[in-house]
Length: 429
Ligand SMILES: Cc1ncc(COP(=O)(O)O)c(C=O)c1O
Image (cartoon, rainbow, N blue to C red):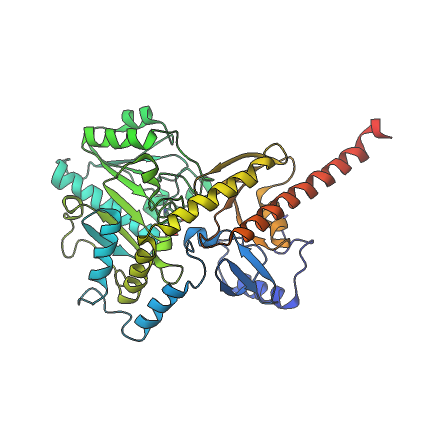
């Protein structure tokens, strides 16, 4: 039996129903959205077609770290819209150089290769690592391997899903790209065993977001760094979701004072306005790319570069990172009492939390639907985990209100579970 698009308990207006039915009729069904139709947004809040407001606690999977329509980002985009939006890389434009200079400085690296989506940046990283492996490390042609972690999420292209361990992401999309080795996340011994003389790179998310905000054991990233240095292997850090302020630092690698050989960035780099991604690395790594070997029609376009530069500027003072740390601490303190009261576990770093709801009480999806009923939007993952990643600019009072709604949904579910138990427990009659 297929699940209804709009659960019975959701009161959807005819306008909402019409929008949902249209979208479902004319788009491929590669998502199962919550039944809310957003029309406008500002800061941490969105408004639906019926004028109902919701607190956005998914924030475009962290693409909206700075909130919806941040005034400085909108201004940068607006100014650039009035000048020039696309040149292609066949010509220079006056935005790309300043953007790349500022981004490289933020990351402490030399060079930037701009792309558009996160998946393209990961693809770029894979290509660069292989080329570096052949030209610099001396791996025999077509023999390079890259070691990755189980439960990874690096995107959706056919190469990337070739090393996914998520059956639904892979199934039916073979044949798969060879040259990847998968080891358990956080297991440095398994990583060391997988690395050999043909290994060009280790590709990791410093914190696995899509998996449910999985944080590796303390010391792991430092051990990866040492292994990579000893074995002449590149450490590619996919910070597409963890980077740019989310965890309370500019990059999640900073929590272990680790500098990878390459940052892979996306999502928040475009400020939630345009897709902007990039790989950022030292010159001895990115220097292997020469004219014709890689590119993108839209990568590095002046509109994207202007927005990306404004994003880098926003992060320059460190205030947003500090805010993510402070609010993250508050989020943690307010979620902690829910453990044992409908929540099995919480993992968090900065303003980013994965909350495992007790499956005996409800699924992650049901929790998200009920939160939506209370005006909070977020997303489940892997059955019973719910991610909380509100925009970093969220007001503290809104954050508190959100955790109150979270607690209320769990309390209501526990109450009705208790009522059901009482009704069926023969000792209670
Ligand atoms: C860590 C990570 N890498 C790569 C991607 C893919 O980015 P995109 O959806 O922009 O292709 C994502 C998206 O969720 C991600 O979280």
